[in-house]
Length: 24
Image (cartoon, rainbow, N blue to C red; front, top):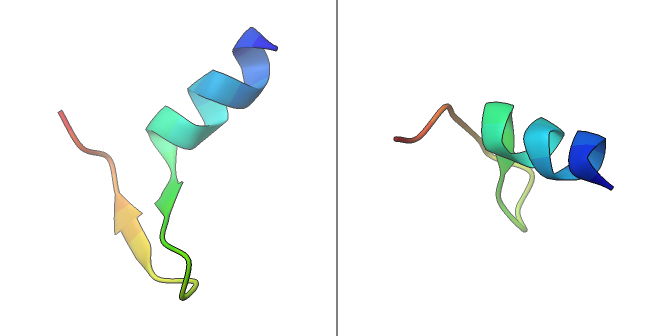
């Protein structure tokens, strides 16, 4: 489960498929 959470933190993808990138 931690792997999925980390993947989201590293690559934030919006509902439209936009790559926001890494957010502090």
